[in-house]
Image (cartoon, rainbow, N blue to C red; front, side, top):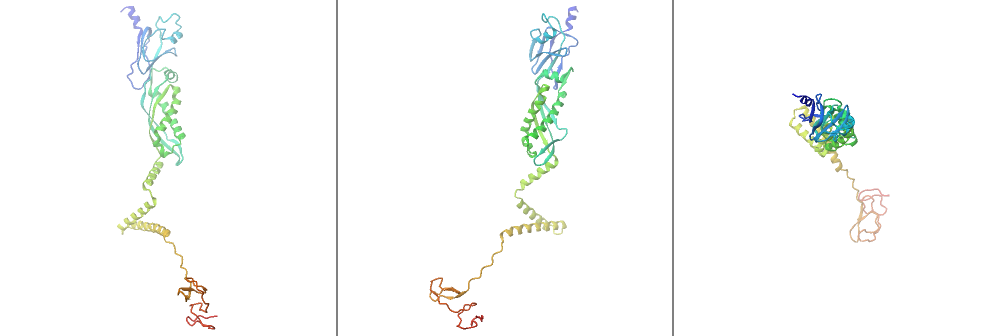
Length: 352
């Protein structure tokens, strides 16, 4: 082996990264103590970004493509290295590959119940879970804010931070939307979109962005779920008056089928009282006491002209209008009485 081969073995002429994992966000290229030679080939694959770092300072950034390294495509590195006459000698630099593809189906959930104020049930506690997807939007920001000097950076290293922001943003979304607890299930899509927008505002400074956010379930307290079940049952029943009558009739029928049962007798008595009360209320609205009929006016005889009955004390016939002669009549039975008589000869009424 010649001295040229020894020197060449200390130089790097190809820089690339093949990602064989599913959860690596940042990979630091292993220089193994070697230097980068002039004209070295840099390959950046799709969904990757290569970043050169010189002594802790971010330098040049390369998007997907194939590059032959020189001073023309390393302007920042050239300035940092103070290459007055160009890039002619090997140099040392850290190279980081950032994975910009989407990381899908990441799970989130509320570790503790989230408090919310509901217009119907007051303050209640809810739990929720779902999934989200994200990708790196600003690689240089991610390196500055999160990565540091580690050799690799995994999804799990930033996932917990996103989950914490998720729970906080979801709580705000539910509170600001003012959606009743009974209607949350029908508004998952709206809440998801609102929460995702709120979360992106909080994680953008980390260099990442959510591309999807899904609420799969929001579980309510057991007491609220029971109240929902009762409301559903009431909706199925419909007319409560008819339903009460039906239930009372069913109780009476079951009681009649168990004549020797004490419990059945009690149920039957209670149902009978309820039925009797309902029937009494129903009949009370129909049966009203009738007014006593008025006594008919007493007749004082018949008209001598047309034979129609005439009322006592009438001076004219109400049928033909004939003038009637005023005669002494009994005030009790209406029979004519003789002048000067002290008693009615028909009924014995005492006369004045």
